[in-house]
Length: 454
Image (spheres, rainbow, N blue to C red):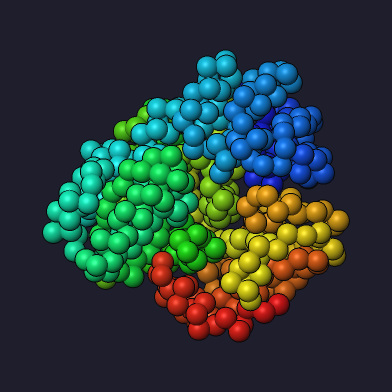
């Protein structure tokens, strides 16, 4: 088992990892920028190290500073959380080269699955269905026009090194395509340092389904699926498990394909294989693999009873998978909503500030993952995620009712948050019926802007 863990992250995920590690008897070291000196993860860890100025590139993205903090405090391992360096192959390699354990997959696996083109190739080799599109990177606009013969319109132009919904353009006609392709190339180069592109056919009212996997480098299991179809600007806002849209046959095939892919690439740790599911055609397609713990992992924990972060730590410490597939059982339904410091009535403008009155919801089946406390000053330098509200109940209908109750109970004074969005969604008939897709929320927001004032 690991002895001392450095958490190379901040916010609610750092708090989450610290708690899991301490439950396993692992000492914890928090890192923080100058802007995060008073953060909750700093207060909860056994030790804390200042790694630099507020700007992420000078602190949370500074590999040398992170490794120095680990060495100076005698850590034997590093957990990257999500975001920042979590899917950075060079960071995984550097941690390993420093004689430390990286809590996650190898740099080789991150490199393979982090590049969307090589990930598609790996999926196809493992007989996992992929969205029709280019077989590799598209070398120039002339080659891209040839791909259009197979994909038709609308077509999605995507950054090969992209992630998190960024680096994507959709073209509905040849004129739009001619304009979007060079723009996408420039955007990819600026955002990821890699201008490589590939193309995929746009699947019409698709659902976003993802499968949670756990693997130890040789063996792998799945922990069933989550649905993340409610998205704004391709960013997830509401996640739930299991998906009510999947027939049992499709669920079995989809989950089995995720396990096959994890085994094929020698994956180790917790990972998520993401798919689009076409309701009308009753077909699913691989889109990417996230080589880290995800924001929405608590809904899987709620329905399975498995502590995914603890399992990551056990695997990184050298244990083989403790669970067999037959051990993973689903109970009830869970929903997570992301509470951001944003004003939904003003096009989700960021709203950093000081937390006033704080009332955290409770009761059966309610979980609140956050880094908040009364008086905490939310800094303006990082992602706007404040907290995640997770509810679990026997049925989806009961979970939505419990979510609405917990949201009404919640109070975060001094800030504008996305709470009004989720109260409105919980009351919407289409959401209650589960009749949504990945582009549904954008249309709903256009029609319901007035409902979002707090």
